[in-house]
Length: 45
Length: 379
Image (cartoon, rainbow over all chains, first blue to last red):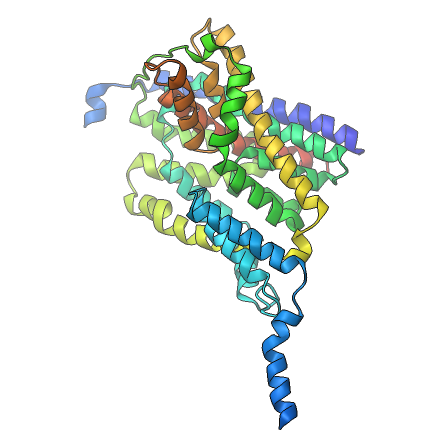
């Protein structure tokens, strides 16, 4: 594989892959917050 | 008799006789690193042992990096096996509070944008004639994360380890110097004045405990090659949030992290032998590293501007600059810059969220990069 193809592929897949992974994780965090909502009295125990 | 005395005297001056021109230069570089660490307070925990290691390895005939040398033993045992950066990651996880990030998960995306400099610099390094694996190691300076840079470089371009590590740690400490002008250049006064309100406490303990497990499993499945980095940081965080293993958490965040930081620093310094270090390539790497971190800031702020538009002005684009891994320095810079334009603006906790997102983002970016080059069959 030549350097040009490698560089462009890395930029596209690397940046896209990082963004996509963190987006999925942010959605999962929202889901976690819904499943286990914060309740002040529970947190004090 | 006279011959014996002369031979003895020769032994005492042999160090001076074998001094290469590059050795005194590197001793001066070591002194500069010591000055920056001790006098200026720039990442002293690392710059002091790195600087001293650089001095040690540039004294001729001591053989500290020879096969039996004590620095070689430390280097082979901890850096080449990647154990040191991973142990440091357990400590980082044990010290990090992902609470502000969990309060507002969408700012996780800023932690991705803050890594774009890695990939853009990688492409530039390739254009400048570096090999593919060297370019990967140079680009990773943009993770703004010392252990990640060491982990990747020790695998793929160990001959660049000294330059990459010094660039990563020294630029990380210079974040307060070069970020503010970029932030000012890319944002309007109105944008810098946006008040994001206070961060409400809305994350349960259960969520905080499950978070590191979910991140490890999901991100590990997507980028398995980055799992050692991600797994160790999340293990540290799980120990902290569970509260069940307080002794291990404290040991990871203090004793283990301190010992490993010392050994890591001195063995990185030991890679800075003048004969190997002082070349055109090193200067190029230092320049590319600086560019990588500046590009991270540019991409982070621009993504912050995009999020401001999408959220109809609820996001202050300045917090995009905190989407890098320099924790908590980048968040403090955002807070300081925000308050310059609106004294009632408290961006710190929002920026902390983006900053912890940047920590996870840098590890994931490295993992994605390693998995992609593995998938391409480069390694």
